[in-house]
Image (tube, rainbow, N blue to C red):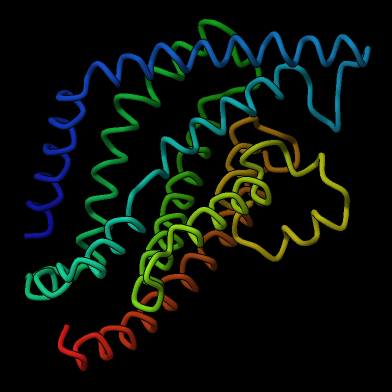
Length: 269
């Protein structure tokens, strides 16, 4: 049943993409334009500084770092926080609790189906077009494969964070403010705007205690095939750290959900 649901979800998401194909085509056109803007921007910055590297990044790596941010978002994006919040606020959660499939797995399968569609129709075309505009001389088939693996882990971690945010609707009338705060923090402290190497040492240490850099910073480092993560040992440490955060997030989701549902049912939800 789960396999059939998953395949149906993939089919549904592809149909939705086709229904909004004009928006999809606009997105495909805008992304290369953004890349061109970044090329001119970073060329000017490097020329002004008269250097070949800034904080350990070459011109090519800085240009592709910004592209890597887009790629990571394509891999991880989902609406779990919004969907869970809506179920709770509207009362539709009661209906979902009667379904034969657990709501967590229902949302996870839906999110995976959404991202498979995104990878096929956004990531692959973007990577090809970007490579034609500004060839990534650092990229290898192996580093690309490693990147895909860590992005899958990033997706799982991001989904769990979103799921936890959605669950706050049990206690908060509106969790949109919390959602924005987490997203801003994730971008600032996870390398979703600029590399963490540009931050002062004390702020980098703060980032070490948060899961956010395992969503953006490290996957992009793998994509750039940086020396610090190019070995199998270094890459394995990243994957294990991601796995640890995922397990912790899954356990937390499970425990908080049991408590919240118990109270939800007790008040007649």
